[in-house]
Image (cartoon, rainbow, N blue to C red):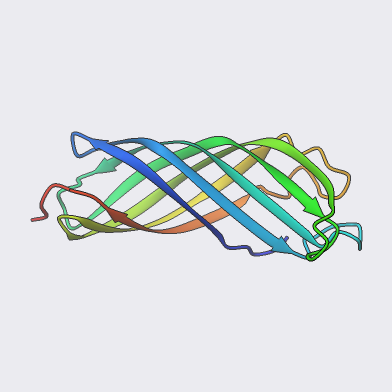
Amino acid sequence: GQFTVGAGGGGAAVFSNRFIFGGYGMGHYVNNPDSQDPGVETLNLGYGGLWIGYIHNAEDIFHAAFSTKFGWGSYTINEDLNSGIRIEGNNLFVLQPQVEGEVNITHWFKLNFGIGYRWVTNVASEYISDNSFNSPSGSITLMFGWFKPTN
């Protein structure tokens, strides 16, 4: 029920200037999560795994891409920010497909904007619902590498 900002990174190889295969990691931190218990103060979510995708017309300055990230991770719920007392935690699985728009800036730098949806399974909590981590997602990605020269 809250807007959060996550940070992460990844690395991938691009084959035939079209196919993406790599790995990624993400982390989210929420202070005062939407919980039924007033003693729950912080929630941490971390996950990582495989990243696959397809780039359409990569040689065009503006072009579309599609990707899916899926992996494993965990969440922890803490009593408060300073004590670090862990109330609960569990492992989980994440699936996050998205559609993207890319801009070729130089032969070594691209800017990517994506929208998608994050599905999370295996949330077994008495404090938060099973759907607490499922949500629409957006991304802004700075991509560095050696890409085919733009037109």
